[in-house]
Image (cartoon, rainbow, N blue to C red; front, side, top):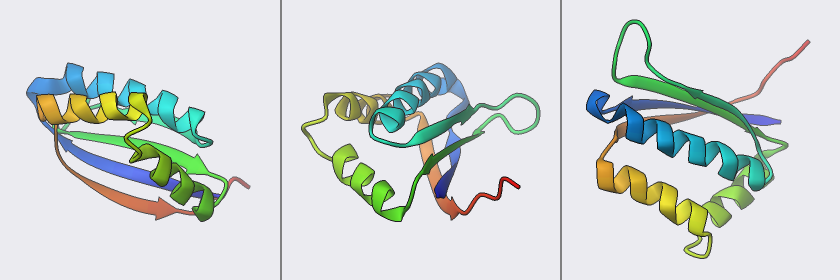
Length: 103
């Protein structure tokens, strides 16, 4: 299993747009074979940092997801990307891959 950890720097004035974006990606990741563990929005502390975690059975599964995700044929992905582009709710992000340990 591989888990992707995303750290977002977001526009604190666009929290609603970012939350809409996140809810859409949760559904997309789950539909495309992953398991989304959620988006984590700012609460206390920094108001411009958010996180997301999702897992795939392996790196090949993640790479297949990425191919589908960037396909212009997947209307849900196109719409989610458009939210981020139109609202500029995401300033930057970092992606890290982790290997979870459950026991």
